[in-house]
Length: 133
Length: 133
Length: 133
Length: 133
Picture 1 (cartoon, helix red, strand yellow):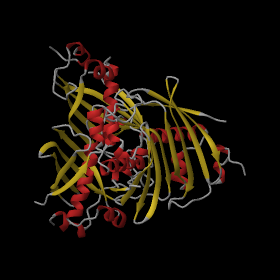
Picture 2 (cartoon, rainbow over the protein chains, first blue to last red; picture 1 turned 135 degrees about the vertical axis):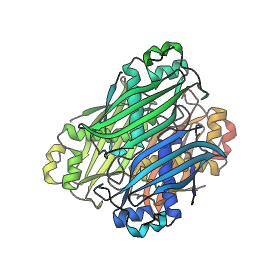
Picture 3 (cartoon, chains in turn brown, red, orange, cyan; picture 1 turned 90 degrees about the vertical axis):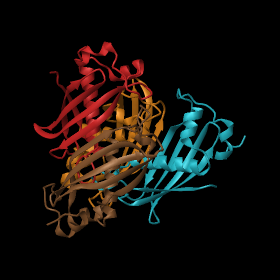
Picture 4 (cartoon, rainbow over the protein chains, first blue to last red; picture 1 turned 30 degrees about the vertical axis):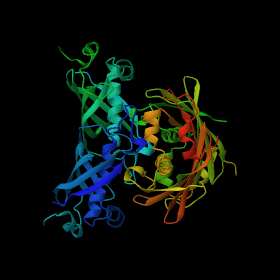
């Protein structure tokens, strides 16, 4: 199982008046992390979108928050594919700061064309994501 | 069961280059909707935070996306309490545009003090949230 | 001179750990306010973008901050056109809470086509924005 | 004159339906860049805020947009102090992608205490910011 690792510095803009990172921002981090994951296996998301018109629409997103994240901390996000088919893929994430678990997340995606209609991922990308025939 | 309804106009800032609302923003809408819910039962969240030092920390968040939301649409969010105890509460959400379901969400929260340590919700708020003894 | 007025409730997501609204969010409010302005003179921005391929690209943005804005406050934004030509327009904004001035802003825009190249605003929209020949 | 340089990868969340970075996000980048600037001269903003209760409130912000920024581009932000006194400082920014200028910005700040009242920057920080007596 391939696992990628992303490092994200918490931005001031991401905090809220509770003094911690606002909960919706973890989903922004997951997006950064899954693009890094794709890049790490040789799939340039930007290219797939621009050249092949394949969008990765989010069908489901989930996060379990363990510890608050603080401004200026460096969050490391471990990302892996927990499921992959030609029509949908599922990413799992673990977010850490200094070895302590901040949060765990999961996102489920379906491949769509530019009109946001479901489609199969073109064959040429299958191997990169470990999709079997 | 009490259900509140919030109306949110989609902001340009909330869209992304896919031409639809970026997925993390649904969680911002849920936050607006649950504050509206609280207000509708007489619980001013801002007051609870400022006067009693009670924060509603998010422990878990989930969203299932059905249809993309578009710029300038008016989204209506129906919100209700699906679970309520003195230590945690759970909100459920249904988001609609023109009668069609956009998304369904759920958030689980624990009550915390200003140091972000779990606490029981003060008794005076129990009735408002339908928490039994 | 036509002046529109928008009312915006401060979102929790818009605050930062200083306990006030994060400074970049005022520009999001200006965007909401200028879309309201356009609507109030009969120009549906969304339509102009979708049907005529006219985008209102921001060329310059400025904000002077007077008082911090707080969570859950209702901000009213007064908006007017301080300059309007077929190639560029300038909006001015005044943001208030309970009669006190929060901030003043200004944005300058150029009309662009879908390829982000400058263009003249189609004639049919001129009267709405008070653009003379 | 000291100039710091920050590198920021454009996030998908930062784009809008025009296919480019939403204009308010440039101000988020400026914030990241000025924290980097502070760090580069030995001033840890987070520490100043937490230990000395000194906040850097934004009094004015300005951006001139030259070229649109695109998803996944690496933006480099050059930052320097264009003015520095014990009560206010001014940062200037130049944002580039591959040697082309994206935008230029400026922010003016006043030092405040936790109650958001103006104060003088404590003496011990003066030398770091080149503030003369």
